[in-house]
Amino acid sequence: MYRSLLPAALLACVLFASCGKKVSKTEEHYLKGNELVLKDDLANAHREFELSIEADSTNWRTYYQMGGISQLEGKFQDALYYFDKAIQFNPQFTLAYYNKANLEEFLGNEKQSLKDLNRTIQLKKDFFTAILTKARKEYASGKFKEAIADLDEAIKIRSDFYLAYSMRGSSKFQLKDFKGAIADFEQEIKYAPSHVMGYVNKALAHGELKEYRQAINDLNIATQTDPMWSQAYLYRGMYYNLMGVKDSGCTDFRIALKMHNPQAGSYEKQYCK
Image: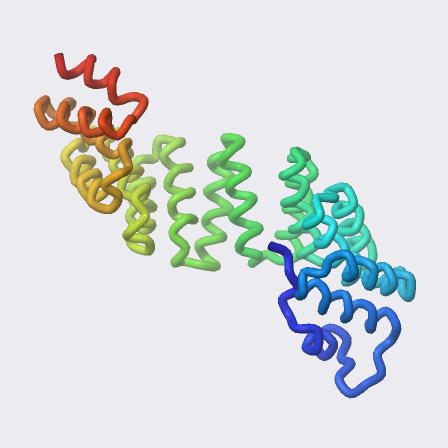
């Protein structure tokens, strides 16, 4: 949800250094608009920001706020226009590029979204969420090496963020670097021991290396962590069957079937006749 992060009185001090000073008309309307945003009075906030722009048509902060309000109102093309205006008058304004990139992605303009995202990172190399967003885009488009490179940078900034390891591990998995993937999934588990996908993905990487016992051990923890996640039983049943432990495998397939897993029925028919 878009909101101004600072109370209006503090915005006056920080953004305009106006504590104890007479504020200009553009500042006055800008600050009043922020107060109204905090009260969810978007229509009147919109009007105050328009008055701020009338007083100073180069006020990039006001254009940025107008972009945020337009986005909340579902006026996405207006929001893009205002973000572009904020950038026009402050080409170094990273948040305008970043929010515009996210909105472009939402509207399906992927090429422009990536361009704005790259500009965001050029301006602020430690913009953690922007780097993660870029890595996610690269993973989705099959650019796994590029995703890994960006995730390396993200992890330098925040070494405790489990989803960065999860995405990097998944990228390595796609490149068939299964040992590297396992190392990343272990880091994911270290920082988020309740995140079931860390155990599941680690199990799948062990499975690709034919390390079925290790895979089953990971899936044992996965089923304990989230007993309702049916896919873990399906995978464990598959690895039991690959080890020749048919009874245990079929038990897992039937558990998954009772949980309405869409693949469980075919697995039971194939392996449990």
